[in-house]
Image 1: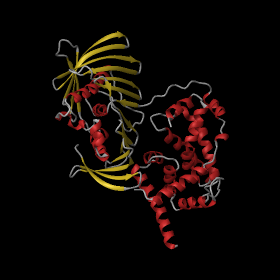
Image 2: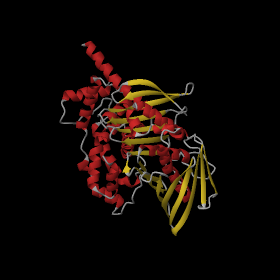
Image 3: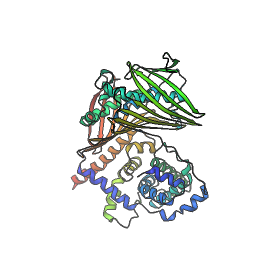
Image 4: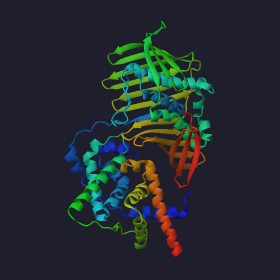
Length: 174
Length: 356
Protein backbone atom coordinates (compact mmCIF):
# COMPACT_ATOMS: atom_id res chain seq x y z
CA UNK A 1 0.00 0.00 0.00
CA UNK A 2 1.19 3.51 -0.78
CA UNK A 3 0.90 4.97 2.71
CA UNK A 4 2.55 8.24 1.71
CA UNK A 5 -0.17 9.04 -0.77
CA UNK A 6 -2.99 8.13 1.59
CA UNK A 7 -1.44 9.92 4.55
CA UNK A 8 -1.14 13.10 2.53
CA UNK A 9 -4.75 12.79 1.51
CA UNK A 10 -5.79 12.00 5.06
CA UNK A 11 -4.04 15.15 6.23
CA UNK A 12 -6.26 17.03 3.80
CA UNK A 13 -9.37 15.40 5.20
CA UNK A 14 -9.95 12.71 2.59
CA UNK A 15 -12.24 10.03 4.01
CA UNK A 16 -11.48 7.55 1.25
CA UNK A 17 -7.85 7.54 2.29
CA UNK A 18 -8.90 7.00 5.88
CA UNK A 19 -10.95 3.99 4.76
CA UNK A 20 -8.02 2.62 2.79
CA UNK A 21 -5.65 2.97 5.72
CA UNK A 22 -8.19 1.48 8.09
CA UNK A 23 -8.75 -1.64 6.00
CA UNK A 24 -5.03 -2.10 5.42
CA UNK A 25 -4.08 -1.79 9.08
CA UNK A 26 -6.99 -3.09 11.13
CA UNK A 27 -5.60 -6.62 11.60
CA UNK A 28 -2.24 -5.30 12.71
CA UNK A 29 -3.87 -2.87 15.15
CA UNK A 30 -5.96 -5.66 16.61
CA UNK A 31 -2.92 -7.91 16.83
CA UNK A 32 -1.17 -5.11 18.72
CA UNK A 33 -3.82 -4.38 21.33
CA UNK A 34 -5.32 -7.80 21.98
CA UNK A 35 -2.32 -9.42 23.70
CA UNK A 36 -2.05 -6.39 25.98
CA UNK A 37 -5.71 -6.23 26.95
CA UNK A 38 -6.51 -9.96 26.73
CA UNK A 39 -10.14 -9.12 26.12
CA UNK A 40 -11.76 -8.84 22.71
CA UNK A 41 -14.30 -6.26 23.84
CA UNK A 42 -11.63 -3.99 25.31
CA UNK A 43 -9.47 -4.58 22.26
CA UNK A 44 -12.29 -3.40 20.06
CA UNK A 45 -12.58 -0.19 22.08
CA UNK A 46 -8.82 0.28 21.83
CA UNK A 47 -9.00 -0.15 18.06
CA UNK A 48 -11.65 2.53 17.82
CA UNK A 49 -9.65 4.90 20.01
CA UNK A 50 -6.55 4.22 17.93
CA UNK A 51 -8.17 5.35 14.71
CA UNK A 52 -9.75 8.37 16.36
CA UNK A 53 -6.37 9.38 17.70
CA UNK A 54 -4.82 8.78 14.30
CA UNK A 55 -7.21 11.29 12.76
CA UNK A 56 -6.59 13.77 15.56
CA UNK A 57 -2.81 13.52 15.39
CA UNK A 58 -2.23 12.96 11.70
CA UNK A 59 -0.60 16.39 11.37
CA UNK A 60 2.04 15.31 13.85
CA UNK A 61 3.07 12.24 11.89
CA UNK A 62 6.71 12.52 10.84
CA UNK A 63 7.18 10.90 7.42
CA UNK A 64 10.75 9.99 8.31
CA UNK A 65 9.27 7.07 10.19
CA UNK A 66 7.16 4.24 8.85
CA UNK A 67 3.48 5.04 9.08
CA UNK A 68 2.48 1.59 10.29
CA UNK A 69 5.01 1.81 13.11
CA UNK A 70 3.63 5.19 14.13
CA UNK A 71 0.07 3.89 14.10
CA UNK A 72 0.90 0.74 16.07
CA UNK A 73 2.77 2.78 18.65
CA UNK A 74 -0.42 4.79 19.16
CA UNK A 75 -2.35 1.53 19.47
CA UNK A 76 0.13 0.13 21.98
CA UNK A 77 0.00 3.25 24.14
CA UNK A 78 -3.78 3.33 24.11
CA UNK A 79 -3.96 -0.33 25.09
CA UNK A 80 -1.44 0.11 27.90
CA UNK A 81 -3.31 3.15 29.16
CA UNK A 82 -6.58 1.27 29.01
CA UNK A 83 -5.09 -1.65 30.90
CA UNK A 84 -3.78 0.69 33.58
CA UNK A 85 -7.21 2.25 34.05
CA UNK A 86 -8.72 -1.18 34.08
CA UNK A 87 -6.47 -2.22 36.93
CA UNK A 88 -7.12 1.00 38.79
CA UNK A 89 -10.81 0.28 38.77
CA UNK A 90 -10.03 -3.11 40.31
CA UNK A 91 -11.55 -5.15 37.59
CA UNK A 92 -9.82 -8.46 37.46
CA UNK A 93 -7.93 -9.05 34.31
CA UNK A 94 -8.69 -12.36 32.71
CA UNK A 95 -6.01 -14.94 32.79
CA UNK A 96 -7.53 -16.82 29.90
CA UNK A 97 -7.67 -15.24 26.52
CA UNK A 98 -11.07 -14.15 25.39
CA UNK A 99 -9.90 -13.88 21.84
CA UNK A 100 -12.72 -14.61 19.52
CA UNK A 101 -15.91 -12.93 18.63
CA UNK A 102 -15.98 -14.11 15.06
CA UNK A 103 -19.14 -15.59 13.64
CA UNK A 104 -17.29 -17.07 10.71
CA UNK A 105 -14.81 -19.52 12.12
CA UNK A 106 -15.54 -22.87 13.66
CA UNK A 107 -15.34 -23.39 17.38
CA UNK A 108 -12.74 -26.08 16.86
CA UNK A 109 -10.43 -23.83 14.89
CA UNK A 110 -10.84 -21.07 17.42
CA UNK A 111 -9.91 -23.43 20.19
CA UNK A 112 -6.80 -24.61 18.37
CA UNK A 113 -5.56 -21.08 17.77
CA UNK A 114 -6.48 -20.06 21.28
CA UNK A 115 -4.55 -23.06 22.53
CA UNK A 116 -1.48 -22.15 20.48
CA UNK A 117 -1.45 -18.62 21.80
CA UNK A 118 -2.10 -19.69 25.36
CA UNK A 119 1.22 -21.57 25.29
CA UNK A 120 3.12 -18.35 24.79
CA UNK A 121 4.18 -15.65 27.19
CA UNK A 122 2.63 -12.23 26.51
CA UNK A 123 5.69 -10.96 24.71
CA UNK A 124 5.95 -14.00 22.44
CA UNK A 125 2.23 -13.84 21.75
CA UNK A 126 2.46 -10.24 20.68
CA UNK A 127 5.42 -10.86 18.39
CA UNK A 128 3.71 -13.83 16.73
CA UNK A 129 0.50 -11.87 16.20
CA UNK A 130 2.27 -8.82 14.81
CA UNK A 131 4.33 -10.99 12.48
CA UNK A 132 1.67 -13.45 11.34
CA UNK A 133 -1.50 -11.36 11.55
CA UNK A 134 -0.10 -7.87 11.19
CA UNK A 135 2.30 -8.93 8.42
CA UNK A 136 5.03 -6.84 10.00
CA UNK A 137 8.72 -7.41 9.53
CA UNK A 138 10.99 -8.19 12.44
CA UNK A 139 12.59 -4.80 12.00
CA UNK A 140 9.28 -2.98 12.45
CA UNK A 141 8.21 -5.12 15.38
CA UNK A 142 11.56 -4.32 16.97
CA UNK A 143 10.93 -0.60 16.60
CA UNK A 144 7.39 -0.74 17.92
CA UNK A 145 8.25 -2.91 20.90
CA UNK A 146 11.53 -1.07 21.45
CA UNK A 147 13.69 -4.18 21.33
CA UNK A 148 16.71 -5.19 19.24
CA UNK A 149 15.82 -6.93 16.02
CA UNK A 150 17.88 -9.97 17.03
CA UNK A 151 15.75 -10.36 20.15
CA UNK A 152 12.57 -10.26 18.09
CA UNK A 153 13.91 -12.88 15.69
CA UNK A 154 14.91 -15.09 18.59
CA UNK A 155 11.60 -14.71 20.45
CA UNK A 156 9.59 -15.41 17.32
CA UNK A 157 11.50 -18.61 16.63
CA UNK A 158 11.24 -19.59 20.25
CA UNK A 159 7.48 -19.05 20.23
CA UNK A 160 6.96 -21.19 17.16
CA UNK A 161 9.24 -23.86 18.55
CA UNK A 162 7.18 -23.88 21.74
CA UNK A 163 4.00 -24.46 19.75
CA UNK A 164 5.62 -27.11 17.57
CA UNK A 165 7.06 -28.92 20.58
CA UNK A 166 3.68 -28.88 22.23
CA UNK A 167 2.12 -30.33 19.12
CA UNK A 168 4.79 -33.00 18.96
CA UNK A 169 4.38 -34.04 22.58
CA UNK A 170 0.59 -34.03 22.11
CA UNK A 171 0.96 -36.38 19.15
CA UNK A 172 3.29 -38.65 21.07
CA UNK A 173 0.83 -38.93 23.91
CA UNK A 174 -1.78 -40.10 21.50
CA UNK B 1 13.02 -25.03 4.55
CA UNK B 2 10.02 -24.06 6.63
CA UNK B 3 8.35 -27.27 7.71
CA UNK B 4 4.74 -27.96 6.98
CA UNK B 5 3.77 -27.99 10.64
CA UNK B 6 5.00 -24.48 11.17
CA UNK B 7 3.22 -23.25 8.06
CA UNK B 8 0.01 -24.76 9.34
CA UNK B 9 0.42 -23.13 12.73
CA UNK B 10 1.05 -19.73 11.16
CA UNK B 11 -1.83 -20.18 8.76
CA UNK B 12 -4.16 -21.19 11.54
CA UNK B 13 -3.28 -18.19 13.69
CA UNK B 14 -3.43 -15.81 10.74
CA UNK B 15 -6.80 -17.04 9.48
CA UNK B 16 -8.46 -17.15 12.85
CA UNK B 17 -7.18 -13.83 14.04
CA UNK B 18 -8.04 -12.05 10.84
CA UNK B 19 -11.56 -13.40 10.85
CA UNK B 20 -11.84 -12.36 14.48
CA UNK B 21 -10.76 -8.76 13.96
CA UNK B 22 -13.74 -6.58 14.87
CA UNK B 23 -15.03 -3.92 12.49
CA UNK B 24 -14.97 -0.51 14.13
CA UNK B 25 -15.09 1.63 11.02
CA UNK B 26 -18.81 2.35 11.33
CA UNK B 27 -18.30 3.66 14.85
CA UNK B 28 -15.91 6.37 13.71
CA UNK B 29 -17.38 9.62 12.42
CA UNK B 30 -14.42 10.66 10.32
CA UNK B 31 -15.56 14.15 9.32
CA UNK B 32 -16.70 15.11 12.79
CA UNK B 33 -13.36 14.15 14.30
CA UNK B 34 -11.33 15.67 11.51
CA UNK B 35 -13.12 19.00 11.55
CA UNK B 36 -13.05 19.18 15.32
CA UNK B 37 -9.27 18.91 15.32
CA UNK B 38 -8.24 20.37 11.99
CA UNK B 39 -11.09 22.57 10.82
CA UNK B 40 -10.77 23.23 7.10
CA UNK B 41 -7.15 24.22 7.13
CA UNK B 42 -4.87 23.18 4.32
CA UNK B 43 -2.18 20.89 5.60
CA UNK B 44 1.31 21.78 4.45
CA UNK B 45 3.14 19.46 2.18
CA UNK B 46 5.18 16.94 4.09
CA UNK B 47 8.67 16.16 3.20
CA UNK B 48 9.91 12.68 2.49
CA UNK B 49 13.48 11.52 2.53
CA UNK B 50 14.18 9.79 -0.73
CA UNK B 51 17.18 9.11 -2.89
CA UNK B 52 16.63 7.71 -6.36
CA UNK B 53 19.56 6.72 -8.44
CA UNK B 54 20.37 5.28 -11.84
CA UNK B 55 22.20 2.96 -12.14
CA UNK B 56 23.51 0.72 -9.42
CA UNK B 57 26.95 2.24 -9.52
CA UNK B 58 25.33 5.49 -8.47
CA UNK B 59 24.69 3.83 -5.17
CA UNK B 60 28.38 3.33 -4.77
CA UNK B 61 29.10 6.94 -5.56
CA UNK B 62 26.37 8.15 -3.25
CA UNK B 63 27.81 5.97 -0.54
CA UNK B 64 31.15 7.60 -0.97
CA UNK B 65 29.59 10.98 -0.62
CA UNK B 66 27.62 9.98 2.40
CA UNK B 67 30.72 8.50 3.93
CA UNK B 68 32.46 11.77 3.38
CA UNK B 69 29.55 13.76 4.69
CA UNK B 70 29.16 11.72 7.78
CA UNK B 71 32.66 12.14 9.05
CA UNK B 72 34.24 14.59 11.41
CA UNK B 73 35.80 17.39 9.49
CA UNK B 74 37.65 20.59 9.93
CA UNK B 75 35.48 22.42 7.44
CA UNK B 76 32.66 23.36 9.72
CA UNK B 77 30.09 21.36 7.79
CA UNK B 78 27.21 20.42 10.03
CA UNK B 79 27.23 16.71 10.63
CA UNK B 80 24.36 14.41 11.51
CA UNK B 81 23.96 13.54 15.13
CA UNK B 82 22.74 9.98 15.62
CA UNK B 83 21.30 10.90 18.99
CA UNK B 84 19.06 13.53 17.44
CA UNK B 85 16.37 11.92 15.28
CA UNK B 86 15.32 15.24 13.79
CA UNK B 87 18.75 15.98 12.46
CA UNK B 88 19.63 14.85 8.97
CA UNK B 89 22.47 15.65 6.66
CA UNK B 90 22.75 19.30 5.98
CA UNK B 91 25.08 21.24 3.77
CA UNK B 92 25.76 24.75 4.80
CA UNK B 93 26.65 26.47 1.57
CA UNK B 94 26.02 26.38 -2.14
CA UNK B 95 29.69 25.64 -2.72
CA UNK B 96 29.39 22.49 -0.72
CA UNK B 97 26.24 21.36 -2.46
CA UNK B 98 27.76 22.03 -5.85
CA UNK B 99 31.07 20.35 -5.21
CA UNK B 100 29.69 17.30 -3.52
CA UNK B 101 27.12 16.73 -6.24
CA UNK B 102 29.81 17.17 -8.84
CA UNK B 103 31.93 14.60 -7.10
CA UNK B 104 29.10 12.09 -7.08
CA UNK B 105 28.45 12.47 -10.76
CA UNK B 106 32.06 12.47 -11.81
CA UNK B 107 32.88 9.45 -9.69
CA UNK B 108 30.46 7.44 -11.78
CA UNK B 109 31.82 8.64 -15.04
CA UNK B 110 35.35 7.95 -13.95
CA UNK B 111 34.38 4.49 -12.85
CA UNK B 112 32.89 3.92 -16.27
CA UNK B 113 36.04 5.18 -17.95
CA UNK B 114 38.42 3.12 -15.84
CA UNK B 115 36.28 0.00 -15.63
CA UNK B 116 38.45 -2.80 -14.30
CA UNK B 117 41.10 -0.43 -13.05
CA UNK B 118 42.51 -1.05 -9.63
CA UNK B 119 41.20 2.19 -8.20
CA UNK B 120 37.62 1.13 -8.63
CA UNK B 121 37.83 -2.62 -8.50
CA UNK B 122 35.50 -2.96 -5.57
CA UNK B 123 32.77 -1.06 -7.36
CA UNK B 124 32.87 -3.12 -10.51
CA UNK B 125 30.99 -5.75 -8.56
CA UNK B 126 28.03 -3.44 -8.65
CA UNK B 127 27.40 -3.73 -12.33
CA UNK B 128 24.30 -5.66 -13.17
CA UNK B 129 25.82 -8.75 -14.67
CA UNK B 130 28.14 -9.31 -11.78
CA UNK B 131 25.45 -8.58 -9.21
CA UNK B 132 23.02 -10.97 -10.85
CA UNK B 133 25.49 -13.81 -10.77
CA UNK B 134 26.61 -13.27 -7.21
CA UNK B 135 25.31 -15.27 -4.30
CA UNK B 136 23.06 -12.89 -2.41
CA UNK B 137 25.03 -13.30 0.80
CA UNK B 138 28.12 -12.21 -1.09
CA UNK B 139 26.18 -9.16 -2.24
CA UNK B 140 25.19 -8.43 1.33
CA UNK B 141 28.76 -8.84 2.47
CA UNK B 142 29.87 -6.49 -0.25
CA UNK B 143 27.41 -3.77 0.72
CA UNK B 144 28.17 -4.25 4.37
CA UNK B 145 31.85 -3.71 3.63
CA UNK B 146 30.99 -0.50 1.82
CA UNK B 147 28.56 0.76 4.41
CA UNK B 148 30.43 -0.19 7.55
CA UNK B 149 32.46 3.03 7.69
CA UNK B 150 29.23 5.02 7.52
CA UNK B 151 27.47 2.91 10.08
CA UNK B 152 30.43 3.12 12.42
CA UNK B 153 31.18 6.76 11.62
CA UNK B 154 34.83 5.94 11.20
CA UNK B 155 35.58 7.65 7.94
CA UNK B 156 38.16 10.39 7.72
CA UNK B 157 38.31 13.12 5.12
CA UNK B 158 39.95 16.40 4.31
CA UNK B 159 38.14 19.19 2.52
CA UNK B 160 39.74 22.46 1.58
CA UNK B 161 38.83 25.61 -0.35
CA UNK B 162 41.88 27.09 -2.03
CA UNK B 163 42.86 29.81 -4.45
CA UNK B 164 42.42 28.63 -8.00
CA UNK B 165 45.65 27.84 -9.84
CA UNK B 166 43.94 27.69 -13.24
CA UNK B 167 43.35 30.94 -15.10
CA UNK B 168 40.04 29.86 -16.57
CA UNK B 169 38.36 29.21 -13.23
CA UNK B 170 37.80 31.41 -10.23
CA UNK B 171 37.23 28.78 -7.57
CA UNK B 172 39.02 25.61 -6.48
CA UNK B 173 37.94 22.97 -3.96
CA UNK B 174 39.97 19.89 -3.11
CA UNK B 175 38.85 16.75 -1.34
CA UNK B 176 41.20 14.17 0.06
CA UNK B 177 39.30 11.01 0.92
CA UNK B 178 41.14 8.61 3.13
CA UNK B 179 39.41 5.36 2.56
CA UNK B 180 37.59 5.39 -0.74
CA UNK B 181 38.42 5.01 -4.36
CA UNK B 182 40.43 8.02 -5.47
CA UNK B 183 42.75 9.87 -3.16
CA UNK B 184 41.92 13.33 -4.35
CA UNK B 185 39.24 15.19 -6.24
CA UNK B 186 39.85 18.72 -7.42
CA UNK B 187 37.00 20.92 -8.55
CA UNK B 188 37.50 24.13 -10.54
CA UNK B 189 34.52 26.25 -11.45
CA UNK B 190 33.06 29.63 -12.29
CA UNK B 191 29.81 30.98 -11.00
CA UNK B 192 27.50 33.41 -12.77
CA UNK B 193 24.80 35.13 -10.78
CA UNK B 194 21.48 35.15 -12.66
CA UNK B 195 19.56 36.81 -9.86
CA UNK B 196 19.86 36.97 -6.08
CA UNK B 197 18.83 33.36 -5.69
CA UNK B 198 19.97 31.69 -8.89
CA UNK B 199 23.45 30.90 -10.14
CA UNK B 200 24.80 29.15 -13.18
CA UNK B 201 27.90 27.07 -12.81
CA UNK B 202 30.43 25.58 -15.18
CA UNK B 203 33.69 23.89 -14.48
CA UNK B 204 35.77 20.76 -14.42
CA UNK B 205 36.53 18.08 -11.89
CA UNK B 206 39.93 16.44 -12.03
CA UNK B 207 40.46 12.87 -10.92
CA UNK B 208 43.72 11.08 -11.55
CA UNK B 209 44.62 13.59 -14.21
CA UNK B 210 41.34 13.26 -16.12
CA UNK B 211 39.12 16.35 -16.58
CA UNK B 212 35.34 15.91 -16.51
CA UNK B 213 33.15 18.76 -17.74
CA UNK B 214 30.41 20.10 -15.51
CA UNK B 215 27.55 22.48 -16.04
CA UNK B 216 24.70 23.28 -13.76
CA UNK B 217 22.20 25.64 -12.26
CA UNK B 218 21.82 26.35 -8.62
CA UNK B 219 18.91 27.88 -6.70
CA UNK B 220 19.11 29.04 -3.13
CA UNK B 221 15.61 29.83 -1.99
CA UNK B 222 15.36 30.51 1.75
CA UNK B 223 15.93 27.15 3.40
CA UNK B 224 16.07 25.14 0.18
CA UNK B 225 19.04 24.40 -2.04
CA UNK B 226 18.37 22.97 -5.46
CA UNK B 227 21.03 21.98 -7.91
CA UNK B 228 20.70 20.58 -11.41
CA UNK B 229 23.96 19.32 -12.77
CA UNK B 230 25.27 17.51 -15.82
CA UNK B 231 28.66 15.85 -15.76
CA UNK B 232 29.98 14.68 -19.10
CA UNK B 233 32.53 12.01 -19.89
CA UNK B 234 35.67 13.56 -21.41
CA UNK B 235 35.74 11.36 -24.51
CA UNK B 236 32.26 9.84 -24.74
CA UNK B 237 29.74 12.59 -25.40
CA UNK B 238 26.82 10.17 -25.13
CA UNK B 239 27.72 9.17 -21.62
CA UNK B 240 26.77 11.56 -18.88
CA UNK B 241 25.16 11.89 -15.50
CA UNK B 242 22.21 14.17 -14.93
CA UNK B 243 21.73 14.90 -11.29
CA UNK B 244 19.11 16.85 -9.40
CA UNK B 245 19.72 17.41 -5.75
CA UNK B 246 17.38 19.19 -3.41
CA UNK B 247 18.15 19.84 0.20
CA UNK B 248 15.78 21.19 2.80
CA UNK B 249 16.03 21.34 6.55
CA UNK B 250 15.11 17.76 7.25
CA UNK B 251 14.90 16.37 3.76
CA UNK B 252 17.27 15.44 1.00
CA UNK B 253 16.28 14.27 -2.43
CA UNK B 254 18.80 12.97 -4.93
CA UNK B 255 17.67 11.98 -8.39
CA UNK B 256 20.05 10.64 -10.97
CA UNK B 257 19.85 9.63 -14.58
CA UNK B 258 22.83 7.73 -15.83
CA UNK B 259 22.95 7.83 -19.62
CA UNK B 260 25.30 5.53 -21.45
CA UNK B 261 25.38 5.62 -25.25
CA UNK B 262 22.23 7.73 -25.10
CA UNK B 263 20.33 5.09 -23.13
CA UNK B 264 19.13 5.24 -19.52
CA UNK B 265 20.34 2.28 -17.52
CA UNK B 266 19.13 0.64 -14.31
CA UNK B 267 17.50 1.98 -11.20
CA UNK B 268 18.59 1.85 -7.65
CA UNK B 269 18.17 3.86 -4.51
CA UNK B 270 19.89 4.49 -1.25
CA UNK B 271 18.64 5.99 1.95
CA UNK B 272 20.39 6.45 5.22
CA UNK B 273 18.49 7.32 8.35
CA UNK B 274 19.62 8.34 11.77
CA UNK B 275 17.40 7.36 14.61
CA UNK B 276 17.76 7.74 18.35
CA UNK B 277 18.83 4.17 18.79
CA UNK B 278 20.10 3.04 15.40
CA UNK B 279 21.61 4.00 12.09
CA UNK B 280 20.16 2.20 9.10
CA UNK B 281 21.14 2.10 5.46
CA UNK B 282 18.74 0.79 2.84
CA UNK B 283 19.87 -0.18 -0.64
CA UNK B 284 17.48 -1.06 -3.42
CA UNK B 285 18.36 -2.30 -6.87
CA UNK B 286 16.18 -3.19 -9.81
CA UNK B 287 17.00 -4.65 -13.19
CA UNK B 288 15.53 -7.31 -15.43
CA UNK B 289 17.75 -9.97 -13.96
CA UNK B 290 17.56 -9.01 -10.33
CA UNK B 291 15.71 -7.02 -7.72
CA UNK B 292 16.94 -6.69 -4.23
CA UNK B 293 16.45 -4.70 -1.10
CA UNK B 294 18.80 -4.79 1.84
CA UNK B 295 18.42 -2.82 5.00
CA UNK B 296 21.47 -2.86 7.21
CA UNK B 297 20.90 -1.69 10.75
CA UNK B 298 23.42 -0.78 13.36
CA UNK B 299 21.78 -0.51 16.80
CA UNK B 300 23.37 2.26 18.84
CA UNK B 301 22.12 0.75 22.05
CA UNK B 302 24.43 -2.26 22.02
CA UNK B 303 27.82 -2.06 23.68
CA UNK B 304 29.65 -4.11 21.09
CA UNK B 305 28.71 -3.21 17.59
CA UNK B 306 26.65 -5.62 15.59
CA UNK B 307 24.62 -5.34 12.43
CA UNK B 308 21.29 -6.72 11.41
CA UNK B 309 20.35 -7.15 7.78
CA UNK B 310 16.88 -7.67 6.43
CA UNK B 311 16.86 -8.81 2.84
CA UNK B 312 14.40 -9.46 0.04
CA UNK B 313 15.68 -10.73 -3.29
CA UNK B 314 13.89 -11.69 -6.46
CA UNK B 315 15.79 -13.06 -9.40
CA UNK B 316 14.74 -13.09 -13.01
CA UNK B 317 13.95 -16.81 -12.81
CA UNK B 318 11.28 -16.04 -10.17
CA UNK B 319 13.29 -17.43 -7.30
CA UNK B 320 12.84 -15.35 -4.17
CA UNK B 321 14.80 -15.06 -0.97
CA UNK B 322 13.86 -13.24 2.18
CA UNK B 323 15.18 -13.24 5.70
CA UNK B 324 17.17 -11.68 8.48
CA UNK B 325 20.89 -11.86 9.16
CA UNK B 326 22.53 -11.10 12.46
CA UNK B 327 26.11 -10.09 11.76
CA UNK B 328 28.99 -10.41 14.18
CA UNK B 329 32.50 -9.17 13.44
CA UNK B 330 35.46 -11.46 14.02
CA UNK B 331 38.42 -9.11 14.28
CA UNK B 332 40.95 -11.91 14.67
CA UNK B 333 40.63 -13.14 11.11
CA UNK B 334 38.72 -10.05 9.89
CA UNK B 335 35.54 -11.77 8.83
CA UNK B 336 31.84 -11.20 9.21
CA UNK B 337 29.91 -14.05 10.77
CA UNK B 338 26.41 -14.20 9.29
CA UNK B 339 23.77 -15.90 11.43
CA UNK B 340 21.01 -16.27 8.88
CA UNK B 341 17.33 -16.91 9.50
CA UNK B 342 15.46 -17.22 6.24
CA UNK B 343 11.79 -16.46 5.86
CA UNK B 344 11.30 -20.21 5.72
CA UNK B 345 12.89 -20.38 9.17
CA UNK B 346 15.94 -22.17 7.90
CA UNK B 347 18.93 -21.14 10.03
CA UNK B 348 22.63 -21.39 9.21
CA UNK B 349 25.93 -19.58 9.70
CA UNK B 350 28.27 -18.21 7.05
CA UNK B 351 31.67 -16.52 7.17
CA UNK B 352 32.28 -13.61 4.79
CA UNK B 353 35.44 -11.59 4.21
CA UNK B 354 35.71 -8.15 5.77
CA UNK B 355 37.93 -5.59 4.10
CA UNK B 356 37.61 -2.64 6.48
